[in-house]
Image (cartoon, rainbow, N blue to C red; front, side, top):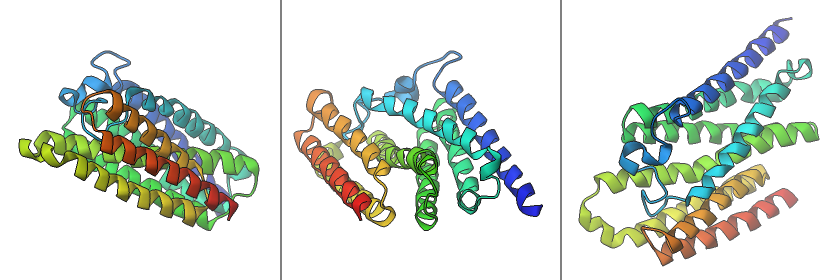
Length: 256
């Protein structure tokens, strides 16, 4: 009986978190009036905001992520998942990730750029915890693998590159002008770190969704640097190389 009560509380918490995420996302994105996300923070969050910002079409992945998270929310609310040990382990962390997801957009619209960096850093840390926990509790069926691992894996993979872009946008705003002379070097160095994180996640968890989402962002980052300001061929090439590496390692992780 106690397990069932805790299960209902967890399911309700996730439903509430998903509802907050959707409402906050609508408000933050300007659905009720106001500037678009690209125009927030004096354009720092746009595709031209830094050397590590993906081109605009990359952000269409949010639609897939939101659909996946909503499908997960409905599925986890079914009675069959109420006492599931896997959902008990990750449910609270997934709810926290949804809240932080919505909170980021609200922060971007109403508060300051450096606060968005803190929120998205917390978000990627929480999602990393989700991925680690999912690795400890294997999926029991295909629905679990698609909805729990897939949706949250895409969320983690995309937020990984989004954290890099958000942080780079902040540094671009506060850094001395002469730092731009070394922008290519710093951008490539950061992409190497992204590669290390992505490879570790793929090999440790055996899941390809995070690698695919990160690679998606990296490909569009490369497109942005090849075709739009600020142009940077070295950064674009590095982004493509890392994207290919992550997909290959992701496949290896799944096969293992």
